[in-house]
Length: 594
Image (cartoon, rainbow, N blue to C red; front, top):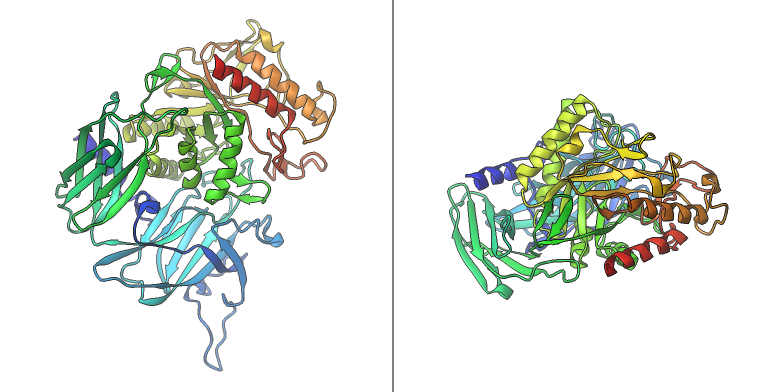
């Protein structure tokens, strides 16, 4: 009964202004057409496009008529890709952009058709052949709309209105320390499926077991009672199961998989086949992740998380990361640092990054963009946060690399916030009881009488793993020498130092004792001091400096040292290694040898 209820929660239509629950693993579908490429675009600064019916894409043919817009011969934008980095006049643009393209399709008998977006920031309204098919809010998770009755044989016209305005009731809200990239940021597909198709599935180790694989399959359509086959050829598993009247079937099978871990990130080909010959394939790893007191335990062994944060950005291109090549560049730099862990701050990053990290043996902290300044009093915000959490878990629940779901970063305690985060933590455990739940806190306090760092926050008591963001030596002076600082923060559970560091401009030398030098020397010294302090944290089980690359941020206005960049990177915006990079590289090498 519990599995049925859990699947019902995951499978339910998300509270998302008309968007449908998306099919899991669109990349593993047989019949899909990429809609990536050049799209026509119109800047709609005053949001007049719907009133002017841009979505009809009309051309005047009568002498007495005209239209005050045209997609033909208009601006051209790459999809996927943010619009801010593609034209100088769009660098700081926030508002509506209309996208349009034609595509050729074959209307197949007995097939259903869906337009699938892997991510659009922040709100997308979609029309096909002049008919509105839906709206989705949230910039970092997929969505889809069924267009079976709208798609035509031959040429089709798809129009998408994208809006990236910051608003108080959005997540993130009005202020955030990264670039507000807008646009169709990730892949777009036309996916065609049988009349009844595989909507969702989960294939993972049973909780608490290393030799039992279990999970479920959920169908969508009219012929919900079918026989399915789940096969893992390398493990010689071929399991036939039958769905019930709701299209749901669970399974359990004994197996002896090689467990996924950073030294051997083993993945197995998994195939799910229906009676109607639909095949969905995936690569899935099997591992266990648990907490044992103040330790994080992977496959029964205590593990120290050697981590790094990064944004979904290619700084050298001044734009969002979106491709496999982009993922390879970022993950290569992560591996060069000696990491076994990443924090994909502060939002679910694209599937190319998540899957490549998993293949390279990186454990992942994945979080929703509840970042400061959230209007927790507004019940609409809670609904949006719940939906974003559901979509994140729904998309990545089969990824062995993901070990921690995070519900928030740097939020201030109050009754409204505490209630929202408590609800999110409880929901996360309900949706996925096989992973850890965390949050990152920046509200630690130093007691000068005892030279001890403390956190007084009710939410820190109910997460499985506590993340601490603390910038001693940058946003606040060191209260005492780092070696004298004591820590008593959630002593009974694992603590990850999820953020620390400071800004420095690559190549700049200066006084290592002066923050306003903006020098690599100051950053290097600060890193050394943090590592000294870490020795006094008894429950420390991981570190994750902020941040891998310098990244773009309108927050950062110093004319010579920042110029619109947050300079906390261990690597510059050109990929050059700063002195602090070598400090962390050495530290992680020493941790590996212990």
